[in-house]
Length: 354
Image (tube, rainbow, N blue to C red):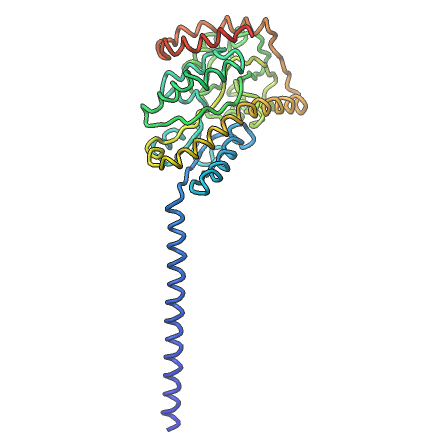
C-alpha cells in the first residue's frame, strides 16, 4: 500500500514537472517568437545604407558623413539607418566603386577625380585653375555645370546626390616648388586622372596613382617625393611629417561626389527619398563653409606644430602658374565636351580677376 502510494506520488510529481516544463517552454517559445517577429519586423521596415569612404573622420568628408547619418535618422524618424565606414574600414580606395556597383555598399563619396573613370566629362573638375576662387567653384557646382556632371553618372547605373567640398590642393615635396618648371624630375602621387597625369608629366614629373592611405608610407620610404592634396588631407595623414616643403598654390580642386547605387535608390519610397535628400542638401550646404574653416584651422596646426617650410605663391606667381597650365584645356576639350567646358570657362573668366 505504501509502495503504491509512493509510486503514485512519484508519477504525479513527474507529471507535474513535465507539465511545468511544457507550459514554461510554450511560454518561452511564445515570448521568443513574439520578440523575434518584432525584431524582424523592425529590421524589415528599416532601410540600411552602408556608406563607405576612405578618409579619416576629422576631415571635411568624414565630418559630413557623420552629420548626414544623424540627420537622416532624425528626418526619416529612424526608418533609414546610415552606417558610416570611414578610413577604408570596409572597402579601399581602389575597389569601393566596384563594391557600389555590386550593391555591397549603397553609398560612397569618392574624390571627383575617380569618377573620370566612369564619365570622362568629369575631367573638367581636374583642370588646373578651372576654378580661380571659391566663388567660381560654388557657382559651377551648384549650377548647370554641376547638375550636368551628376546626370552623366546614370549611364553607369550610379546616381549622384551631391557635391561635398573639401578645398583647393596644395603641393608638398622634398625641395621647394615655386614654378611648374620645378616639377621636373619629381615623383608625384596623384589620384586616378588623365588630366592630373598629363598636368605633371608635361613639366617633366613622373606620377603614381597610389591609394590615399598608401601615400605616407611611400613618401616616408622615398619611393615618391611629392604629392598634391588639400590641407585637411595633408594634416589627417600627417604627410607634413615626411615632406620638407609645402607650397600654397590652390592650383586644383579636390572635392567629392556622394554617389548611391541607382537600383537601390530607385527602390526607396519617394517620401523617404525626399527626407534623405533633405539631409543631404543640409549637409552639403553646411560643408561649403565648414570645409574652408577646417582647412584654415588645420593649416595653422601644421604651421605651429611642424617644421615644414611653407611657401605662399604671390598673385603674380599664381598668374604665371595659371598661364603655364592653360595648355591642358584644349587637349581635353573633346573628352569633356565643348559646351560643358565653355560653360565652365565663362564662369572662370568672370571670376579670374576678382
